[in-house]
Image (cartoon, rainbow, N blue to C red):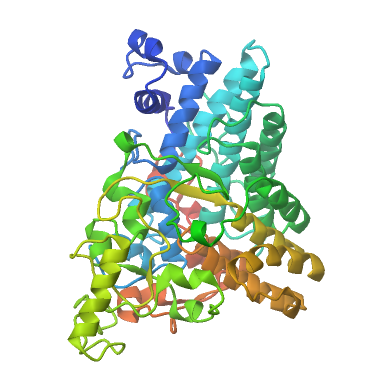
Length: 537
C-alpha cells in the first residue's frame, strides 16, 4: 500500500500554488522536505493540509500514481458512469467507456481502482501523520491547532468512507460484522506496511471515532478559510453520509440538518447558472480550482460540461435518462437543465439516429434541424465542432464556455443534506417529518409541489429516489445510492445503447451480485504481506 508518506509532494504542490510561506520554501527545497520539517509547526501542517485540498480535485502528484484518473474530478463522474446516472451518447474518445461497460472496476489491474485506493490511503497516511505529530508535540492548544486536527480527522473519516463503500459489500445488504473491509492504517513509521482487511464494522467504528473527533475539534476551531477546507458544516455532512450508508437514520437526519444550517438552497437563477463555482449559496464543501493549477483534460468539467472544448464533450454530450427526465413536471424549473429536443447531430451517436434530420425522429427538415443546433451553440457558448443530442445535459456550464478554462468542483450541497434528512425520516416511518423535509427541496424546485400526496414510507422513498437522481445528477451519488437501496441497473428505457454499455446496461441488484464491489488493486495484493489472493473481492 503505502511504503512512505509523500508529504513533501503535498507541501510543494500547494505552497507553489498559494505563493505563501515563501521563506520556508526558500530555506528548504521542495524536493528534500522531510516529514519532520513538514510537520514541525502548525503553519507547516497547514501547508500539508492545503496539499490535500488541492489533491481533492487535482491531477495525481504522488510518486507511484498516475495522473490520468485521479482526484474527485474523475471519481465523481466515474461513479455516475458505473451507477448508470450519466448516459453517454457515443463512445466519444474512449474516456470512461470501460467504466460504463462495467469492465474497469471489476479488473484488479485497472488504473481507476488503483488510483482511487492509492490516493485515498495517502489522505489517510497524511492525516494520521498530522494527528500523531500533534499528539507527540507540545504545541499550545489554539483554535488554529483545533482546526488542523479537526480537518485531519475529517479527511481520514472521509477517505475511509470512500474506500469502505466502494471496495466492500454495502453495510445494509451484507453482514458488516464478518464481511471483509479495507485495511485500517492509523499508525505511522517504518516499515510502512499495511494491515489485513479486518471487517466492515471495524472500519465503520473507526470512521465514527474520527468524524466525532473532527466535529469536537472544529467546534473549538478557527473558521474554515474557504469552502475548500473542511468546515464544521462539512464535517456534519460527512457524518450524515456515513450514518445514511449504515442505516443509522436518526444520526443521518440530525447531522444532515446541522450540515445545511446557513446554506440557503439555490433559486432558479442559481440552479441554472451552471454549477461552476463553489460560491453558490448552498455549496458546503468544494474545490476552488486555481487557474495555474488546473487539470484541463482531466478536469471534472471535461467529463460533464457540454461546452468544454475537449473531444470527450464535442463528440459525446452526456445525457439524462429519458425515463428519469420525462417524470419532471412542467412546473419544475429543472426541466431546463437538459434539452430533450436537441437535434442528434453526431453520425456516430450510439442510438443510430444521429447525423441529420433524416435519421432524427424529432425533425422533418434540414433547416429546423440546423437552426436548433445553432441556437444551442449560441446560447451555451459551445463551438461549431460540438455535437448535440436529445436529453443532453446543460446543467453543468463553464464560466468561459468553448474553452478549457478550469472551474470549481462541488463535493457537498445543502440539497443533498435535505434529501438525506428526508430519506432518514422516511426510513424511521416519520411520514410527517419526511414530508416536511422533502418539501424544503420540492417546493423550491417545483411551483406545484404537493408534499401531502406522499402518505406512506413507500411513496416517500419512491419520490426521494427520483429527487436524488434528478437533483444530484452528475454529482457522483448513483453508484452508492444503488448499493444502499439494493437496486440493480436496467437501462432499457434510459436512452443508453446496449451495444455501447454492454455489461453496464443491466446488472442484478447488489445483494446478490458482487460485481458491485470494486476489485482491490493487484499491486496491493502483491505488495501487502498481510493480504493474499484469497482477500480479493
